[in-house]
Length: 251
Image 1 (spheres, rainbow, N blue to C red):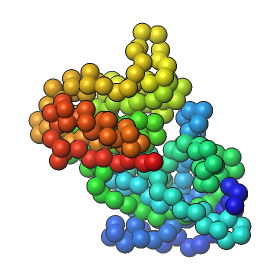
Image 2 (cartoon, one colour):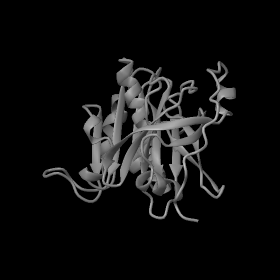
Image 3 (cartoon, one colour):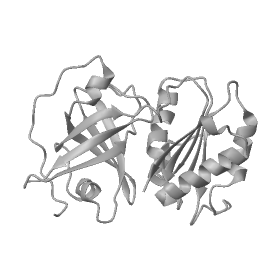
Protein backbone atom coordinates (compact mmCIF):
# COMPACT_ATOMS: atom_id res chain seq x y z
CA UNK A 1 0.00 0.00 0.00
CA UNK A 2 1.46 3.35 -1.01
CA UNK A 3 0.76 6.76 0.45
CA UNK A 4 -1.70 7.66 -2.30
CA UNK A 5 -5.08 8.64 -0.97
CA UNK A 6 -8.03 10.04 -2.86
CA UNK A 7 -10.12 12.79 -1.28
CA UNK A 8 -13.13 11.33 0.50
CA UNK A 9 -16.51 11.35 -1.13
CA UNK A 10 -18.55 14.36 -0.03
CA UNK A 11 -21.40 13.54 2.31
CA UNK A 12 -23.94 15.57 4.25
CA UNK A 13 -22.41 17.32 7.24
CA UNK A 14 -24.68 17.22 10.32
CA UNK A 15 -25.86 20.48 11.82
CA UNK A 16 -24.54 21.92 15.06
CA UNK A 17 -25.00 19.40 17.89
CA UNK A 18 -25.46 20.64 21.42
CA UNK A 19 -24.23 17.53 23.22
CA UNK A 20 -20.45 17.33 22.83
CA UNK A 21 -20.29 13.56 23.41
CA UNK A 22 -22.71 13.00 20.55
CA UNK A 23 -20.81 15.36 18.28
CA UNK A 24 -17.54 13.55 19.01
CA UNK A 25 -19.06 10.29 17.75
CA UNK A 26 -20.00 11.72 14.34
CA UNK A 27 -17.63 11.66 11.36
CA UNK A 28 -17.62 15.02 9.61
CA UNK A 29 -16.24 16.23 6.31
CA UNK A 30 -13.19 18.48 6.68
CA UNK A 31 -12.04 20.48 3.66
CA UNK A 32 -8.39 21.47 3.50
CA UNK A 33 -8.20 25.24 2.98
CA UNK A 34 -4.60 26.20 3.74
CA UNK A 35 -1.13 24.70 4.22
CA UNK A 36 1.51 26.61 6.18
CA UNK A 37 5.12 25.49 6.43
CA UNK A 38 6.36 25.60 10.05
CA UNK A 39 9.77 23.87 9.78
CA UNK A 40 11.55 21.85 7.08
CA UNK A 41 9.68 18.76 8.34
CA UNK A 42 6.42 20.09 9.79
CA UNK A 43 3.44 21.93 8.32
CA UNK A 44 0.11 23.19 9.60
CA UNK A 45 -3.02 22.09 7.75
CA UNK A 46 -6.14 24.21 8.19
CA UNK A 47 -9.56 22.68 7.59
CA UNK A 48 -13.06 24.07 7.27
CA UNK A 49 -15.43 21.85 9.27
CA UNK A 50 -18.92 23.43 9.17
CA UNK A 51 -20.35 21.05 11.78
CA UNK A 52 -17.47 21.44 14.25
CA UNK A 53 -18.89 22.33 17.66
CA UNK A 54 -15.60 23.46 19.16
CA UNK A 55 -13.07 21.87 21.48
CA UNK A 56 -11.10 22.43 24.65
CA UNK A 57 -7.46 23.42 24.31
CA UNK A 58 -5.40 20.22 24.52
CA UNK A 59 -7.96 17.86 23.00
CA UNK A 60 -7.37 15.78 19.89
CA UNK A 61 -9.40 14.31 17.05
CA UNK A 62 -9.40 11.22 14.86
CA UNK A 63 -8.72 11.70 11.17
CA UNK A 64 -9.67 9.23 8.46
CA UNK A 65 -8.36 8.91 4.90
CA UNK A 66 -9.71 6.62 2.21
CA UNK A 67 -7.56 5.28 -0.63
CA UNK A 68 -8.94 4.69 -4.11
CA UNK A 69 -8.93 0.93 -3.52
CA UNK A 70 -11.04 1.30 -0.36
CA UNK A 71 -8.18 1.06 2.11
CA UNK A 72 -8.80 3.23 5.18
CA UNK A 73 -6.19 4.78 7.46
CA UNK A 74 -7.04 6.47 10.77
CA UNK A 75 -4.81 8.51 13.05
CA UNK A 76 -5.21 10.55 16.23
CA UNK A 77 -3.91 14.12 16.00
CA UNK A 78 -3.78 16.91 18.56
CA UNK A 79 -5.63 20.09 17.66
CA UNK A 80 -3.42 23.15 17.26
CA UNK A 81 -6.05 25.84 16.76
CA UNK A 82 -7.62 27.74 19.64
CA UNK A 83 -11.14 26.78 20.71
CA UNK A 84 -12.77 30.00 19.49
CA UNK A 85 -11.81 29.39 15.84
CA UNK A 86 -15.39 28.40 14.97
CA UNK A 87 -15.92 26.08 12.04
CA UNK A 88 -12.21 25.46 11.56
CA UNK A 89 -9.58 23.06 12.86
CA UNK A 90 -5.81 23.21 12.46
CA UNK A 91 -3.44 20.24 12.71
CA UNK A 92 0.35 20.46 12.64
CA UNK A 93 1.96 17.30 11.33
CA UNK A 94 5.54 16.11 11.15
CA UNK A 95 6.54 14.36 7.94
CA UNK A 96 7.21 10.91 9.41
CA UNK A 97 9.52 8.70 7.36
CA UNK A 98 7.35 6.01 5.76
CA UNK A 99 4.20 7.41 7.35
CA UNK A 100 1.06 6.67 5.36
CA UNK A 101 -1.01 9.62 6.53
CA UNK A 102 1.69 12.21 7.19
CA UNK A 103 3.31 11.28 3.88
CA UNK A 104 0.04 11.92 2.04
CA UNK A 105 -0.40 15.29 3.70
CA UNK A 106 3.15 16.44 2.96
CA UNK A 107 3.46 15.18 -0.61
CA UNK A 108 -0.04 14.90 -2.09
CA UNK A 109 -2.60 17.00 -0.21
CA UNK A 110 -3.65 20.40 -1.54
CA UNK A 111 -6.39 22.90 -0.71
CA UNK A 112 -9.80 21.56 -1.68
CA UNK A 113 -9.05 17.98 -0.64
CA UNK A 114 -11.47 16.41 1.81
CA UNK A 115 -10.86 14.07 4.74
CA UNK A 116 -13.07 12.91 7.59
CA UNK A 117 -12.66 13.91 11.22
CA UNK A 118 -14.29 12.83 14.46
CA UNK A 119 -13.99 14.63 17.77
CA UNK A 120 -13.05 16.36 19.90
CA UNK A 121 -11.75 13.46 21.98
CA UNK A 122 -10.41 13.10 25.54
CA UNK A 123 -10.83 15.67 28.26
CA UNK A 124 -7.93 14.51 30.44
CA UNK A 125 -5.29 16.67 28.75
CA UNK A 126 -7.62 19.63 28.22
CA UNK A 127 -6.99 23.04 29.78
CA UNK A 128 -10.18 25.05 30.41
CA UNK A 129 -8.25 28.27 31.01
CA UNK A 130 -9.30 28.69 34.63
CA UNK A 131 -6.03 27.75 36.38
CA UNK A 132 -2.31 28.56 36.00
CA UNK A 133 -0.77 26.35 33.32
CA UNK A 134 2.84 25.18 33.14
CA UNK A 135 3.48 23.59 29.75
CA UNK A 136 6.43 21.40 28.78
CA UNK A 137 6.72 20.06 25.24
CA UNK A 138 9.24 18.68 22.78
CA UNK A 139 9.11 18.52 19.00
CA UNK A 140 5.55 18.09 17.72
CA UNK A 141 4.50 17.57 21.34
CA UNK A 142 4.08 21.34 21.43
CA UNK A 143 0.96 21.13 19.22
CA UNK A 144 -1.73 20.76 21.92
CA UNK A 145 0.21 23.19 24.12
CA UNK A 146 0.03 25.78 21.34
CA UNK A 147 -3.75 25.47 21.41
CA UNK A 148 -3.57 26.41 25.09
CA UNK A 149 -1.24 29.33 24.42
CA UNK A 150 -3.45 30.61 21.60
CA UNK A 151 -6.51 30.37 23.85
CA UNK A 152 -4.69 32.29 26.59
CA UNK A 153 -3.91 35.11 24.15
CA UNK A 154 -7.20 35.14 22.25
CA UNK A 155 -9.24 35.41 25.45
CA UNK A 156 -6.72 37.70 27.18
CA UNK A 157 -6.74 35.42 30.21
CA UNK A 158 -5.25 36.72 33.43
CA UNK A 159 -4.15 33.35 34.85
CA UNK A 160 -0.39 32.74 34.43
CA UNK A 161 0.81 30.50 31.61
CA UNK A 162 4.40 29.44 30.97
CA UNK A 163 5.79 27.24 28.20
CA UNK A 164 9.12 25.44 27.99
CA UNK A 165 9.58 23.88 24.56
CA UNK A 166 12.43 21.68 23.35
CA UNK A 167 13.62 21.34 19.75
CA UNK A 168 16.71 20.02 18.06
CA UNK A 169 17.60 23.41 16.58
CA UNK A 170 16.03 26.82 15.90
CA UNK A 171 15.12 25.59 12.42
CA UNK A 172 13.16 22.69 13.96
CA UNK A 173 11.26 24.86 16.44
CA UNK A 174 7.58 24.61 15.49
CA UNK A 175 5.64 27.90 15.78
CA UNK A 176 8.88 29.84 16.34
CA UNK A 177 7.29 33.08 15.11
CA UNK A 178 4.48 32.93 17.68
CA UNK A 179 6.38 32.65 20.96
CA UNK A 180 6.67 35.55 23.35
CA UNK A 181 7.92 36.28 26.84
CA UNK A 182 5.96 33.35 28.28
CA UNK A 183 8.11 30.85 26.36
CA UNK A 184 11.56 29.40 27.00
CA UNK A 185 13.10 27.48 24.09
CA UNK A 186 15.61 24.69 24.72
CA UNK A 187 17.78 23.32 21.89
CA UNK A 188 19.33 19.86 22.03
CA UNK A 189 21.55 19.81 18.90
CA UNK A 190 22.38 23.38 17.89
CA UNK A 191 21.40 26.79 19.23
CA UNK A 192 21.85 30.50 18.53
CA UNK A 193 25.13 32.06 19.65
CA UNK A 194 25.27 32.34 23.42
CA UNK A 195 22.45 29.86 24.07
CA UNK A 196 23.58 26.58 25.67
CA UNK A 197 22.85 23.29 23.94
CA UNK A 198 21.36 20.41 25.90
CA UNK A 199 18.27 18.67 27.19
CA UNK A 200 15.59 20.35 29.23
CA UNK A 201 16.99 20.54 32.74
CA UNK A 202 16.15 21.48 36.31
CA UNK A 203 17.44 24.99 35.60
CA UNK A 204 14.55 25.48 33.16
CA UNK A 205 11.86 24.12 35.48
CA UNK A 206 12.83 25.05 39.04
CA UNK A 207 12.50 28.86 38.61
CA UNK A 208 8.97 28.40 37.29
CA UNK A 209 7.96 26.14 40.18
CA UNK A 210 9.40 28.74 42.56
CA UNK A 211 6.90 31.30 41.24
CA UNK A 212 3.94 29.30 42.63
CA UNK A 213 1.01 31.44 41.47
CA UNK A 214 -2.20 31.46 43.48
CA UNK A 215 -3.73 27.99 43.29
CA UNK A 216 -0.47 26.43 42.08
CA UNK A 217 0.44 25.18 38.63
CA UNK A 218 -1.41 22.58 36.59
CA UNK A 219 1.39 20.99 34.55
CA UNK A 220 0.94 19.62 31.03
CA UNK A 221 3.68 17.51 29.44
CA UNK A 222 3.59 16.33 25.83
CA UNK A 223 6.20 14.58 23.70
CA UNK A 224 7.84 11.24 23.08
CA UNK A 225 7.88 8.55 25.76
CA UNK A 226 11.45 9.45 26.68
CA UNK A 227 10.72 13.16 26.91
CA UNK A 228 7.53 12.62 28.92
CA UNK A 229 9.40 10.55 31.50
CA UNK A 230 12.27 13.03 31.69
CA UNK A 231 10.10 16.16 31.92
CA UNK A 232 7.70 14.73 34.48
CA UNK A 233 10.68 13.67 36.63
CA UNK A 234 12.03 17.23 36.50
CA UNK A 235 8.68 18.56 37.64
CA UNK A 236 8.38 16.15 40.57
CA UNK A 237 11.94 16.80 41.70
CA UNK A 238 11.22 20.55 41.60
CA UNK A 239 8.19 20.09 43.85
CA UNK A 240 5.24 19.78 41.48
CA UNK A 241 2.54 17.49 42.97
CA UNK A 242 2.26 14.26 40.99
CA UNK A 243 -1.53 14.51 40.85
CA UNK A 244 -1.22 17.86 39.09
CA UNK A 245 0.85 16.62 36.17
CA UNK A 246 -1.01 15.62 33.01
CA UNK A 247 0.96 13.69 30.41
CA UNK A 248 0.28 13.00 26.74
CA UNK A 249 2.91 10.92 24.98
CA UNK A 250 3.51 9.36 21.59
CA UNK A 251 5.88 6.84 20.06
